[in-house]
Every structure is written in C-alpha cells, then in structure tokens.
Length: 468
Ligand SMILES: *[C@@H]1O[C@H](CO)[C@@H](O)[C@H](O)[C@H]1NC(C)=O
Ligand SMILES: *[C@@H]1O[C@H](CO)[C@@H](O)[C@H](O)[C@H]1NC(C)=O
Ligand SMILES: *[C@@H]1O[C@H](CO)[C@@H](O)[C@H](O)[C@H]1NC(C)=O
Ligand SMILES: *[C@@H]1O[C@H](CO)[C@@H](O)[C@H](O)[C@H]1NC(C)=O
Ligand SMILES: *[C@@H]1O[C@H](CO)[C@@H](O)[C@H](O)[C@H]1NC(C)=O
Ligand SMILES: *[C@@H]1O[C@H](CO)[C@@H](O)[C@H](O)[C@H]1NC(C)=O
Image 1 (cartoon, helix red, strand yellow):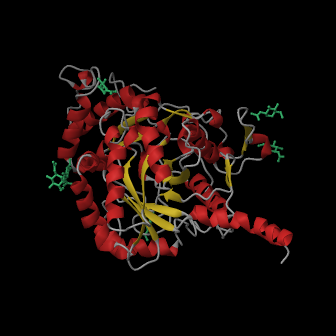
Image 2 (image 1 turned 135 degrees about the vertical axis):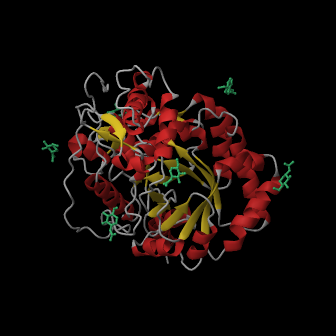
Image 3 (image 1 turned 90 degrees about the vertical axis):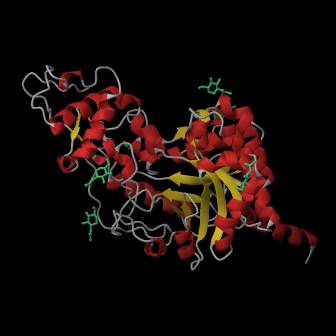
C-alpha cells in the first residue's frame, strides 16, 4: 500500500477509534434506567429485572447496593451503577478501612458476576445548602473508594458522584455556565481533577421539566420535548452554538463551567432525566403525553451513531439513565414526585416506551389537559381516605399547626372554624392554612398522603379558607 493511501485510510478510521475509546467500557446499547425503590408496593427484584430486560434497558442504576437486586442482576449482562449512601461519606473520607469494608461487603460479593460499572459516592450532596461540612469530605471519600477498588485490582468500575443543576450559579446562556462560588474552588476543582485523573464522568441530574414548569411562558414546551422547529431553536451569542432542545443547553452549561475551571475534557453522563406522567391538581405539564414524548424522543436521539453529543461536544458519547422504572408512592413532596415511572407498581405500563429508540410507532396517547398554567384558586384539604387513620391525621395537624404564623388560630375554641369540632374538619383547615403559607417556599400539600389539592372552595359560613 502506498504511504498516501495508508494515511488516507487511517484518517478515515480515526473517528471510529476515538469514539470507541471514549466509550471506554461504559458503552450502553440503549438508555439506562434508574430503579428507585421508594415505594411500599413495588415488585420483587427479580420481577423488576425482567421488566428492565423487557424494555431492553441499556443499563440500570440503583440508589444503594441492594443485595437482592445485585443478585438478580448477576444473571444478566446489564451494566449496573451502585451508590454509597450520603450518610457514609464523612466516615469514609477519614478512614480507609471504612471504604475498604464498604467495598468488601457491598461490591465484592457481586463483582464481577454483576457488571458493576459505576460506583457513585453520594446523591446530590452539593444541593444540601444546610450542610456545608459533608461537601468537603466528598472528594476524599471518592479517593478512598477508588484506592480500595485499585487495591483489589478492580479497574472496570468508575467512581463518580451525582450532581443536580444547582451546582451552577450561571447556566444561561450555556457559554456563561459557572459553578457556584461556594463550591467552585474548594469542591469542584478537586472533584474535576479526580474525574480527569481516573477518566471517570461528571454525573449530572438534568431535568428540562423543572425550569419549564417554573417559567412556561418564556420557555417553549416543544423545545423541552425535543421537537421544536428551527424557529424555536436558540443560538448562544457567546459561542454561536445553536441549541435545538433544553437538555443540551443544560448539559453544555455544565461543560462550559468545567472548561472555565480548566477541565474541559471531563466526560459527561446523565445520571437522571425524565418527565413526570402525573401530578397534583394545578401542577403544570405533568402528564402521560409529555412524559412519553420526552422519553421516546430522547431514546431516538441517543440511538444515533456516531452519537450526536451536544453542540459544545458534538459526537461525544454520553451514558444516560432515565428516571424512573416505577412510580414511587413513598416519595414526599408534590404529586409529580411520585409519578416519574414508566411502570405502575403493579407492573403495568403507564405508557409504552422503547429504550433502544428503534420503535417509532406507538398507540395513541391521551391528549394533555394541563399544559397551560392553571390560573384559578387551589386549596389543600384532607383526603376522604384520611378518616381511616385518625392517629396519622392528628399527628399531621399537630405538625401543620406548629409551623408558620397563626396557622391554626381559627380552629381554636372561639375561632371562626372551631365548629364543627371534628378532627377531619380541623385537618382541612390546618392543611390549607399551612400550604398557603409555604407553597412558594417548597411546602407541599401531601402530609404522607393524607392531603389533596382541590379547586372547590372548602369555606363555610364565616369560616374562610384562604387561597392564592
Ligand atoms: C474506621 O472504620 C473501621 C471499619 O468500618 C472501624 O472499625 C473503625 O472504628 C474506624 N476508625 C475510626 C477512627 O473511626
Ligand atoms: C456553614 O454554615 C454555617 C451556618 O449556616 C455558617 O455559620 C458557616 O459560616 C458556614 N461555613 C462555611 C465554611 O461556609
Ligand atoms: C414552526 O412552528 C411555528 C408555530 O409553532 C409555525 O408558525 C412555523 O410555521 C413553523 N416553522 C416551520 C419552518 O415549520
Ligand atoms: C459569532 O458569529 C458572528 C457573526 O458571524 C461573529 O461576528 C462573532 O465573532 C461570532 N462569535 C463567536 C464567539 O464566535
Ligand atoms: C395497575 O395500577 C394502575 C394504577 O394504579 C391501575 O390503573 C391499573 O388498573 C392496574 N392494573 C392492574 C392489572 O392491576
Ligand atoms: C396510621 O398512620 C401511622 C403513621 O402516622 C402508621 O404508623 C400506622 O400504621 C397507621 N395505621 C393504620 C391502621 O394504617
């Protein structure tokens, strides 16, 4: 072969070599899935694993190192991501034996028969602003875990940690992406240095749903659902890169923030993304139609080879884990929190999805009815079923009345809502009074499932239930 021809062929092949090198053992055939277990009615590990295979999941991520799940996964070829709980980070940071013991008792019994590929140390620990101590233990704990793995010659397991979008203080335009000043120097720099040195990934939890739900008039829904036409695309004036969807925009904000600190080559993985399929009354855009559209379009996008990457990182391969396998009924907060699954706990589908992205034809979806902001008033009252557990209602009323200003004044003797003097009537008042004060600062109308939102004014006689 003549030298020019040889070099020509080499040039042709180079992109493929670099692609497979980047993929580096953590290459998934299709979208990964988060298997959260915060439900009291979920199927067994082995049934869940068979569901994952049925959906042709490319990988699975769990929030601990549940031995039953790892055992069930041992009989599959599914790549697995496991997690060190947040509470253990500090003890590991200062104690190599603690890290060694954790690896010895949680990972070793299942490795390599379960294809554990990622070991995530902590979940979104930099989002807990009330804890400014554990964050400094994060990288030391990751370093010890990594040392533990190396000392046992385990080289296929990458060590990382998951981070929400709130690690950024600037995310728009993406080219201005920057980490929060409180963590940039003391946490992000050593973290990115660790990820570079160990060729691991920055695991981002990125949900276009949240910025859209907070500002649906300025953010286009189609742009979030990967189906905006070119008139809705966005060109970042700082980089001249054109964005076709909000997820890319979020991921590039992270990429630019990393580059700003001099770590522009750290790989990105999406640890969580998805769209809620239902929510409380008045919660915008949480429906089966949007959830199915988001996940199906993302699956199709991730299927393209070579990978699309993002505008700032064209062609980059990114492992992606959808949230979540099941709707989880024990998650606190607004109704959306309990509705991220593509399966009901009884194993039936909330909607059809093909994680390989190959399938393009699906049955008709119910049309969305809550894609516009709800403008009417909303109250929070006790559910009918609450009457079945008076102890629980009593506890919830005591909690609500202990919060805020004069929350329960009107249900004291002589107050306008004292009559009827029943626990359920008082709960209606207390739940609403609590929620109206705290709904804008993260308070939810939930009370362990005892409360529900309504658009029917519960006021009676001279007893007025306030609502915004
Ligand atoms: C370090 O961890 C080991 C194993 O978990 C534990 O037995 C030991 O007490 C710890 N040492 C300190 C100083 O906390
Ligand atoms: C940590 O938080 C406490 C209380 O919020 C504050 O007083 C302290 O200055 C903070 N320390 C650092 C290092 O940010
Ligand atoms: C893009 O969508 C808008 C409405 O959403 C429509 O008016 C416009 O004609 C579309 N443009 C193209 C090129 O499809
Ligand atoms: C973006 O494009 C415009 C027009 O082509 C050019 O003037 C400008 O310098 C570019 N900016 C960047 C950051 O590349
Ligand atoms: C499964 O659960 C969903 C949601 O609760 C329900 O609508 C559906 O009827 C159930 N299906 C079966 C077969 O039990
Ligand atoms: C009532 O609720 C409490 C939690 O507040 C729970 O511990 C208890 O088991 C419940 N009782 C019944 C009968 O459901």
